[in-house]
Image (cartoon, rainbow, N blue to C red; front, side):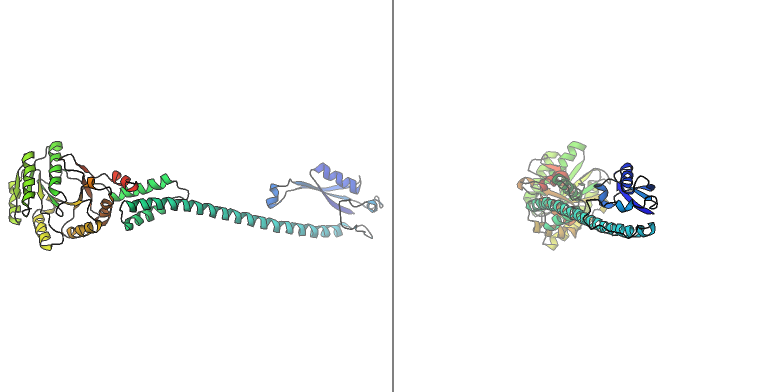
Length: 394
C-alpha cells in the first residue's frame, strides 16, 4: 500500500495531482483544509490537502515509473521496495514538524518585532505630545512670572494641572485649565451687605497712604444709593488732621453723621448713640505695621464690638512691593480675620500681588479701586478678570 498527501488550492486540483502521480486507481482516503498560522494568515490562502492511497499489487510497475517533479533540486530517492503506510507516515511527520517549528519560530520573531515597533512608536508619540504640553505650560508659567505671580504659587498651579492633562492637549485646553484653576483659587469675593445684626460696624484698617478714607466714602455712597442704607462715620485717626477733615467733607456731602473716637470708652458709647443705624464705618489711623503699640490701639477699638456685629477690611495698595505686603498682612493677621481691598489698580499694570496675597493669607477678596472719583471708581473684585490679566501680556 502506497499512501501520499497532496496539497493544492482546491479539492479538484489536489485530487488531480493524486491521480496523476498514483494513477486512476488511487483512492482518496481524507480531505482537509489547511489554514495558514500566525501572521501568515494575512498573506496566504487556505490549502486543501488530499490523502490518497493505492494498492501496489494492482499495478506493481506503476510506482516504479513515477518520476519526481522537475522542480525538486534534491537527488531522487530510490527504494528497493515501495514504502508501506507505516514507513511513509513517520518520515513525512518528522519533515512536517521541522517545517512547522521553523515557521512558528519565524512567526514568534515577527510578532515580537511588531510589538516592539508598536511600543517604540507609542513611546515616541507620547514623548512628542508630552514635549508639546511642556512647551505650552512653560510659556504660560513665564507669563505668570512676568505678571509678578510669586514662583511658589505659579509652580503650585502648574503641578496641580499637569496630572489632569492628556498628552495631546491643545494650547487652548491647557490655557483654559490654568485659567479655571486661578479663578478657583481667587475664590468668591466677600463684599459688605446689609444682612445680619444691626447696626454693623465695618472697620477699615491698613497702612498710611493706601486710600482708606476715599474707599470708605465710595462704598458708603454706593450702599446709600443702591440700598437706601442708613450709615454713620467714625474715625480714630486723630494723628492726621487732614484725614479727619477729608472724612468730614465726605460725610457732609453724603448727609450723614460723623464722630471722632479717641479711646475704647468713646467707642463703647457709640453703640447706643448709633443703635438705629444700619452700618457704622470706622476709619482707623494709618499707622506703621511695625509699631506694636499703634497696632494694639487698633485691636483694642475693634474688640469693643462683638465679633458677630463687625466686619474688618484690610486696605492695601496694588502698587506696594510684594515683600512689604507680606509684612503688612502678617502683622494684621495677628489682630483679626479680615477681607482684602486693593486700591490704586489704575497705577499699575500688574495684578500679580492680588493673587499672591490672596494665596498667602487665604483672606477673601472684596473690592478694588482704580481712581479718585466717588463713588464710581470702585468695583467688587472680579476673579475672572484678574485671571485673564494674569495670563495675558501688558
